[in-house]
Each structure stands twice: as structure tokens, then as C-alpha cells.
Image (cartoon, rainbow, N blue to C red; front, side):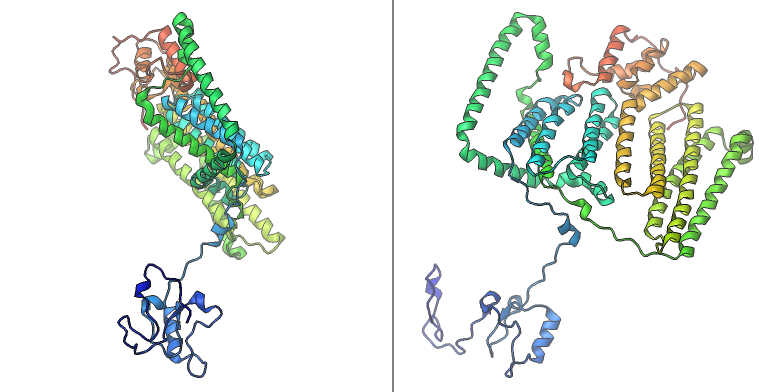
Length: 580
């Protein structure tokens, strides 16, 4: 037998037929061999006639695949050597959506990523405003260069998503309210992810906004690999750039300091334009730098090798018979029609009779109806989705039946949406407008737009429907942010005060700077009491220009033009709203 190379454990080896002490072995030549060493040999142990023994067949059927093989007559191996667990294969859809190998990262992409990280560290630490748009520009350039290197070209819907995301980032620069700003930033990230993935189906539109999360790790590795590959052979080109940037920075600091000390106006301008960076902010700035770096690399990696969410296929449900499918929906349509008929009778017959018969107050009638109708609209969308999944589809007659039944349901639901908005309008006329009432009315209005899109898709075809619904959501968030619920609340309540002299001054203490122009029209002492909370929340006037919204700047001008009377007694002024 050929000896193997001696390793660190060579003294423990012994020849076949001998023990380490030199004595004979009772059963020599019975070594086990692994699967890889056996090659094409059968995994089953054979009996004397070459057939599988009954014990082996029972053992295989009960315990799974065999890990080791033995020569004839050898004792059975231990259980831990004999069996191995089966590896579970990943789901087919997970394999289908995997991206391809991205092209090597370009130098232009790396410079854009570095610019994004630096701007994030310098500008994002002071608040949100125009700085989000400034940081988004180099990040978008990095994604553009990466997509160009991968051979991807922008399509019309890609431009729609990209321009929509940029427009949404203008909301923090214009408005001060927290909820519209949060929704605008989240929606901008979602639309940007859709632009990078290029999705057009329902799974793509739903899961596409999450694709950037999957590129955080691979994008960082991809960028580091590209940087190492370029650093090895381009030191002669990189060092001159580094030296030029260092010399320019030294010149700016030296001469900028001299000019700032020579002229106060120039010093003030320089102080407003330059970021306020201190040593104590170092850890926070480093976190922002890392976030900008990883985020820009993730966007570029997604543009170069996006996840293929559109490859997920959702199989249609089993088609139902016409009677089984249509009867419940026809009954639902009749119920909607009866409700709408009663609403029309109330509208033309007046509310007094209804209030007398039901015993409800005006506010209870309006509030109760709106929330129920909002839930009814949401459930209708669920019913339409399930009905489309199980709709009969044997021929043209079935297609006509589906369009007719669902079309009538959509049309009746639009009337329900109008009734819900009318209930909210009655409630606002009686007790004023609040943030919650604006928000839920905006949701109801957007649901009505979605139902209109479904109605049109049923008539002309609906391949464009997923992207249209996503685009309508982006437009709704943009309109919600630009109008600003705080500004709308202040405007409507000031108008109501001018008509009825009823107002809730205490509620205005929590509004943002968006409400300042409308509240400035109130007479004293209502004006000072209403603007007192906004003035406290404005903060320091020395905040940098890139972290200050237009609404904040305008509110500061209003307060500076007519100072707030701190001696005003605000307790008991106005009349409290029937909240929420």
C-alpha cells in the first residue's frame, strides 16, 4: 500500500494489521471510504449476490441518504457517520429575482459616492431642508453612471419615478410640518427605488421600494472591490488630485479667514454659506458620512444589477362558476344601491328629520358616518382584488360579466366616497378642521382616485394599473405636503372665526410654522396667543440656510414685523373644538 505524506499526526499512523503497539488487529482491512473517494460506486451495501439486503433497504427508507460506504462484511458505522441532513433548496421565486453580476464600478461612480458621503456629513447634521436635495444630486449621478456602465438606458417610467422623487424632496425645503415631511422623504426613497429597478407588475411595485435594503451589503463590497482594483494601478493619477484638493482647501481657509476678519458683511455671508462643524459633532458627522457612503453605493449597485421583482409570477386562483361568483357581488351591489338611495333622500329631504328619528346629534351623525364609509371603501378594494382572482374566464361572456359586475361596484363605491367626504365637510363646518380630519379626508380622496383607475383599467386593459396606482400615491403625498395640513387647518379655522367668532386658540400651540400666515390675520390678543407656540418652536434664527424651510423663514419675518405681545391673557379665549 502506498504511504501518504507524513503530516503532524504521522506518529499516530500504523500499518494495516497492526496496532500502535505492534500487535495484530482482529479484523484488518476494514477501512471506510467517503462518497467522494468511491466515485461511481453504489451507495447501498450489497449482499453476497450483489442485491440489496432487506436490512439495508429498511434502513435507507427510514433514515434518508447514506453518508459513508463500506466494504462487504464491515461492521455498520456510527449513526453520525452514516446519515446526513438534506439541504433545503431556496424557493424558486428567490432564485428568479436574483440580480446578475454588476459591471466593474467606474471612477465617476466612486467620485459621486464620495461627494454624497461628504455632503451628508457636512449638511445633514443640522436638520432637514434644502440639504436633502443637495445630497440627492450626487447620489443620483452615481446611480446614473452605474446604470450606464451596465448598459441600462432610462425609460419613460424611469424618468417619471426619478422626477417624482426629486419633487417630493422639495417638500422639506418648503414646509415645516413633520408628518408631510416624513411621508415625502419615505415616498421619495420608494420612487427612487422604483426608478432603479424599473418595475411594472404588482409584485415589482409592492416589493421594488424594498430593493435598496438588499443592496446595502453587496453594494459596499462592490464599491470596496472596485476601489482596491483602481487604487493598485492608478496611484500616479490619484495623488495629483489629492494634492490639488489639499492645496485648494488650505488656500480657501487662509484667505477666507483674512477676508472674514477684514469685512463683517463678508464674514456674515461666509458664516451662512459654510457648514457649522465642531469637534464635538465628530461622531455624529462620521455616522452621517457612513450612511451617505453606504446609501449611495447601494443605489449605484441597484442601478447596475437590480433585483428582478417582475419575474415573480402570481398564479391566478381557481375560476369559479358564474352563479357562485356573481351572486354575492350582485347582492353587494344592491346593498350599495339601497344605501346610496337613502343618502340621496337625506340630502334632498334635509337632516332635521333624520336627527329627530335617530336621536343623534349633528356631530355624532357626521363623525359616525365618515369612519364607517372609509372602512367600506377599503374593504371594496379587497373585494375587487379577490373577485378578480377567482373570476370566471371561459370566454367573452365571462369577461363581459366580470366587467359589468365589478364596474357597477366601482361606480357605486365612488358615490360612497362622495358621501364620506360630504360627512366630513358637515363635521368641519360644525366644529372646525384638525390635522386628523385633513389626513383621513386625503386618504379617502386618494382611495377614490384608485377606484377610478380600476374602473378605467377594467374598460381598456390594466397592464399600466400598478404603476399608475404608485404614481397616484406619489402625487397625493406631494400635494399633501405642498398644501400642508397645518396651513389648511389654520386657514379654515380663521375663516370660521370670521364668520362665527368661534376658535380654539389652544389647538394652535402645536401647529408648525406653516400656519403662521393665516394666524397672522387674527386680531389681538388672539394673534399673539395663536403664534406663541409657533414662535417657541422656531428655534434659533442662526440655523443654516440649507436646514431651514421656507415656512420657517416666513414665520420669522411675520413675528419680527409684528412682535408677539407676551402680556396677553390666553386662558379661556376661543371655543374648544370637538376633537379629534
